[in-house]
Length: 295
Image (cartoon, rainbow, N blue to C red; front, side, top):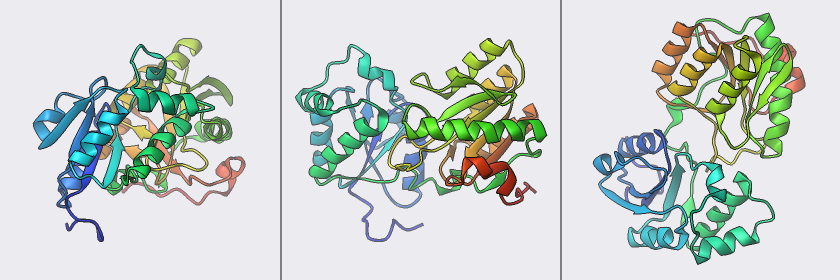
């Protein structure tokens, strides 16, 4: 496949955090004739990136100035952020350089949108465009409807409808993007700990009773960063935690190892359904289109 129209196969950079996301972006870009320069965050990114990236530099999480210098050195004009950087790193002992310290000091709130949004503005001031993090990963974005062999049952559907109402409100506040529900009661709300730990906390609270997980995008989701992600580990955590259904947003959630993930969910008896991201959560159960079944 040819490189994206209007962009050359050079001039692309990847700012890599943890997990599989950076590897998938590199693979997707390479399939389109683009070889990315990689700036890997030392505290988060996998050492395996050295094996798959042809041009790679390591930086500390606090080294914003160094990151910009390296992007310029590599001739990067378009950059992708991929891979989680744990939000609680803000409160760690990592020392920010003068540029990041100045940025942090200027922020009225240190939530994800304001922090990474501010970094994106700094990059733009340096003539580096931060682009949609899913640009090369279209097949991993789910379509509307039921993705697994079974659809949520009536009880799970009621919990999903309730969970959507709560999750979309907390997502609008940039607190988290996921809730765990049982019997139309919110058991756990995601904060800085992330999806898997939130599910495990809900299982401890309920003593192993059945749970439903609802993960949403933000009301105005910036697809350049903090896009909701589900991977195989989350399905395994759900299985161990007796979470029997998962609701996600169609077109705004990345499903890593998608085919294997859906097989694992089917094997565990977990139902996965993707909903319209902009739907009114009060009407999701009564007004949504009939689910599209997996053949």
